[in-house]
Image 1 (cartoon, rainbow, N blue to C red):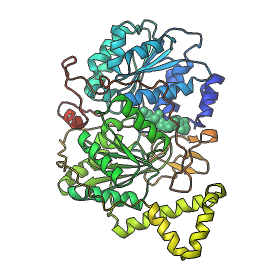
Image 2: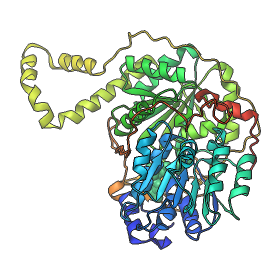
Image 3: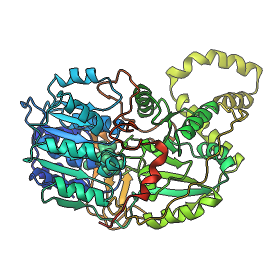
Image 4: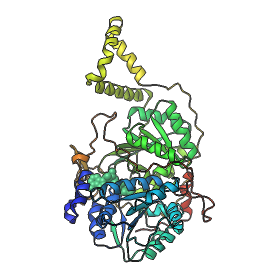
Length: 550
Ligand SMILES: Nc1ncnc2c1ncn2[C@@H]1O[C@H](COP(=O)(O)OP(=O)(O)OP(=O)(O)O)[C@@H](O)[C@H]1O
Ligand SMILES: [Mg+2]
């Protein structure tokens, strides 16, 4: 068990960590922070949702003086959403030191970014494509950079950023520290590390399991044409606090989110064809809870951290086991529990077994709820909502007079039942037809993805979340420490399944002013001759990637 004070951090940083609600370091933080503080280069690997951002963020922040007026630290991340999210965490960590950071990503008006750069940020968090644009325009200079972080490095390479990253790293002075975080260690990552890291320390949190131990994983056998109704039943039977539903293609995501909206669910879609503004709006709505279902392509599979995501649903199975691990890793984060459901058509059952084999995790079969079970779930939810409201005199008072009048005319049970019927917003009669997707045909390959892992043993209770060594989890291996989240930032889930839990406010700093160019997370087809990255092509990399055991 390590507390953050044991790392000898300065009071300003300790205060920031404590205000974020972190009490103990996670296992990857306990290992990585001292090494990074000592100035060594490092390769880090650990399971999803175990705090890798702070593992590099804390030492990075600690090394920068507030008086600095040049760019001294550079963080690269694969997608805009991630760049924004990492910059928010860095911002929080550096708050009391008065550090300035800036997220730079494609799709955002470049002149606006140039204006923000005039505020002399010390830390830049960016996607490689847009960073390179700024470097070429000489609006960003890397001559004084002393720390570089590559977050989700394997994903950046998969997206075709290798050359951009190499060009950028060549411009950073050799006297620097480089930290590389990657879920897997394919040959190209090893080459990159060899070329740009100096005698790196390999920090890996071991686990028997690739996926986070706190996620209960289920699959549902279902026919393609039954998927939509099946999904609605599942959502009704066990209403998620927040859910992410993954679809295979952009078209699929657009159709599915529209269909769910028509059926009365509070949801929206996220995929690479949306403009930056639209993507930001969707993420903001999801983070502040104005929608509780996010339908997304794999653009949301990596790194995204939205507190309160209780369910991940693979409406379509992902192409490769690695994507599966990342997708379901959007829940079960920071010591919380989560559930994943995967829809599997008959022709995909082999692929499911392949995923099980590679992730070394059995996925339990779940029987689709019957219509009446789904209805029951929905009614329970409505009852909870009513009970929540009944307690609030203020909210109920204005309706009392009408209620009394109605009660004089009708039976109370009849009245309440009618009100509940309206509340359920039942729109089952809205006819929905989705364009069918072909079954996924995974290409078997040598895969040894590794999220390291904490070895399980999380348990949650009271106001804080704690990592408790060997106990707690049904599937955990050996624990390596203890960490918990508590105090002011504690994120305990509320008892009610409706509207509970604390959601992270979205304080995204600079809102982009528009522009649909997607040159950071999705490459321009004609740029550098590299193939366009499409939401639905993740699987293609299996043809040319050689995953090696680490
Ligand atoms: N020491 C800690 N105690 C409690 N919560 C923490 C701690 N460190 C990080 N967290 C929280 O855990 C969540 C997950 O952290 P983070 O996004 O850094 O995970 P990650 O390992 O990068 O996951 P991914 O592999 O999905 O990118 C965040 O909400 C973060 O605020
Ligand atoms: Mg991360």
